[in-house]
Structure formats: structure tokens, C-alpha cells
Length: 413
Image 1 (cartoon, one colour):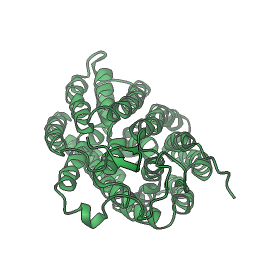
Image 2 (image 1 turned 30 degrees about the vertical axis):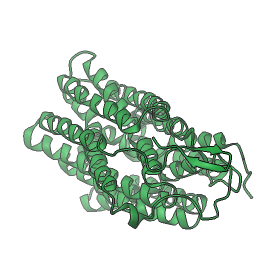
Image 3 (image 1 turned 135 degrees about the vertical axis):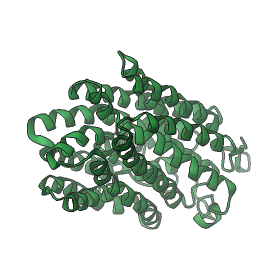
Image 4 (image 1 turned 180 degrees about the vertical axis):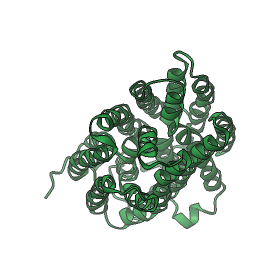
């Protein structure tokens, strides 16, 4: 029987540890680190390698809602623990790939598809169930683990590729995932029991909120779907090609990896800041500010002059530093807790598909135009549209609850 830590901040602690090696730092933010070495080793074009490294993300994104359904039906640990073990094994196997495009794409696709279990869904579901009044802060602190991982993993990957090659690097990352994430989930990540967490009560009618079917017929659902898709295709798609872009302009691979490390620190700062703000300021307004910041960042990166790329990466990191925790926060405030896993899974699926498409399109645009500039312009337009959609969400439907003489009553934002 696992120990039962009752203080809700232990859940946040476990999430920080587990998210250090979630699929973001390990796969998404090392995409650009591996892109050129794999392309050179395999003898492919950059668009081909981008496709091979992205197709699994598309498949994995489709799997996330089913994982959410399973976690809603059973429990977080029952689904996450075996999933982490399977994903780690498959990631290690990527290093055994032949030079066949089909074989590599299949092996990497399987690894990235199973990495869906190491998206933030389990961690966000647990924290949203434990916290209400301090939910934004708790999510921001927890998701800062992704930022720390995004600071460490690109530089670690560059070091590993230099010394043991890209094949050995994936095996080491797989081992780290198993050694860090498995015990973090096993010890700290769980749903609250009766009387635990900030709700402090048992609901006779279950958790408040809408079912997936009820949420899917609301306008808010269809405003958030394209908004998060566009944010993912713009920022995550661009991030995947920052290191190749910088090395194309003469930076050494180690210097480009160090610049990506700044991105990790910026995402951590963005998550902590946004988490603090959304508990106090209407979340769509916070999202608007943070999602518009990367537009200037795209221009700075394109210049590749002096310190401007570093500033651009920081601005992008601040923007992406709000996305995953904002998905969790907005789902809980607009659709409630009743079907949180399924709803979060649907939005994260869309976000993951946008990420995969953005990475692939970045490679294709480069092969056609021999420049990333057209893609950066398109990314900026996408963020403007996303902000326009998010700012039309209206007041929260499930705001913070407060205690009254007769029990708990909603506080409308």
C-alpha cells in the first residue's frame, strides 16, 4: 500500500517532480536538438524528419481523451503507472531503429503515442480535484516543473548526443522518465478522499459540472477548441525549429541548446506568474497578454542578431508558460469537475494535434522557402486570432465556492 500524504501541497510537489520528465521537456522541447543529428544520420530532408518526429504526437494526442475517460472511471494511478513503464520502454527502443524511414517513424510514433500518459493530464486532474480557491496558484507551481525540465532536457540532450549519439540519448531520457515519474505518481498523485482538499465535503450528487456531451454543445467549448489549436501550432510549432534556425545562422549546437534553456526558465516564470494572476484576475485577460507576447519574440528570433534570439525565446516561453495550466483552469471554471479528465483530454488532444502540425509545417516551409520567416508570420497571425476567441468566453460558470451559514455557495465572477 502506498503512503497516504494528506496535505494537498504534496500533490503539487509530486506533480513538479513528475512533470520534469513529462513529454514536453523530453520530446517536444528536444525536437530541435534531435532534428539535425537524425536528419544527417538518416540522409533525409528536414521536412521528412519533422514528419517522422511529429506523427506520433498526432496519434498520442488522440489517445489523451481516452486516458482521461479511464482516469475518470478508475483512478489516476491505475492508469498512469503501467502507462509510464510502457512509454519508457518504447522510447528506449527508438535507439534501435534502422535507417529505414518507415521503421523509424513506426518506432518513434509508438513511443510518442504512448507518451500521452506523461502529458499533464494526470497531474492537472489531481490538482484541480484537490484545490478550489488556490487552484490557479497550485496549477502554476506544478506546471513550473515543465519549465525546469525544459531548461534541463535540451542541454542534457545536446550533451548526450555529442558523447553517445542520438540513439543513446533517447535511451537515457527513457531511463530518467521511469526513474523520476513512476515514483512521483506512485507516492503523491491521487484523487482526494472524503473530507480532503479545499472542498472539504462529500457531495451527495457527485462532483459539479457538465458531461462531455453537455459541454460539447456550448459556445465556450467551440471557442476554446480553435483557440488552443492555434496557440499550439504557433508557439509549439515554432519552438520545435528554434535550434535549427539558430544553427542555420551560425550558432554552435551547444549555444543554441543553451538558448533553448532560457525558454524553459521563461515557461517556468510564465506558469508561476499566470497561476498567481488567474486566482485574482479574470483568466481570459491574463491569457490575452501572455499569448500576444510571443509575436514580438518571433521577430527577434528571425533576426538572429546578438541577444535578440534569446529575448525572443524568453517571450515565447512566457506565452507557452500559460497554456497547459490555463487549459486545466478554464475547463474547471467553465465546465466543472464532473468530467474533468475527458474534457481536459479533448482540449489537450487538440493542443497536441496543433503541436504536431506546427512542427511538421515548420520543416516543410523551410524545405520550400529555405527560410522559417513565412512560418513565423503565420504563427503571429494565429496568436491574434486565438486571443480574439478567448476574450469572448464570458463569466465563469463554476467560480470559486465560499462557505456560508447554510453550506457552500458559488461566487460568480
